Length: 297
Image (cartoon, rainbow, N blue to C red; front, side, top):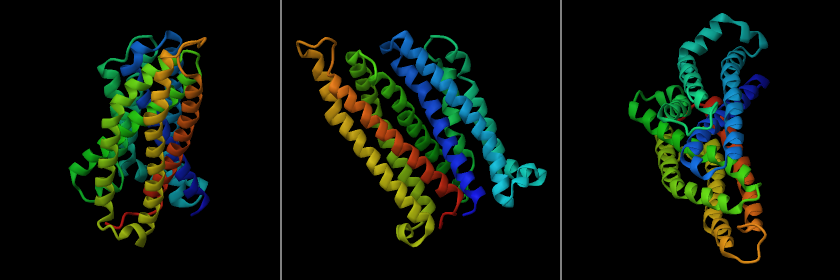
């Protein structure tokens, strides 16, 4: 792997993370707005706007760095032929869909109103833009792209909630944190189920055989990703089964200067931070998986 290949993987990982987190932030504002204070909503909107800007820059960088990776030199970023090949190879269509989807929620982020249907539709478009290009289209089966889109939406819902939840855990109102976490937890069960099921279907389609998990480079990187996802699921289960009940139980404890179990809030903040780090590693593994080697199937 040359330096430009490594750069392409890094840019793609940033693109995954920023896009899915921005889209998921819109989802989070939609289902949690009534439980948040104005200052919290404003802070989340600012971060969604920042993530949107990062995703837009990463989208352009993705095309330039991919062309450089193809040529092995920086001059590839100025090669019209290579840039055209990347653009018309599907990356251009995905970039247009992603940019439109990211910009559609912008008016909603400029006000303190709950994001409307069109803002969420834009977030869905941005999150699923990655399904417009990639190895999944090798088979020519449209249903595989649909399954990947479901996987991406579930990932955006989960990842996009992590940083707002961590932001809330640093505040003083543990009761409000408990209410938001409880609402997210009730919705996340279905999202995590779809995430895992759709991911397994996509991976099985691309591998063709379970033995390719250890026989091929693609399968070995997929195993790393699966291990990271397993760790992420373990943290999520710990948060839901141990920390969230502690946070809610603290609401009824007498003698506290503020409602809620602050120790649980701090523990939840640390656990969510670990989830965010694991999510970043998963994006890096996914970028390597989709950039450095083709699927055996």
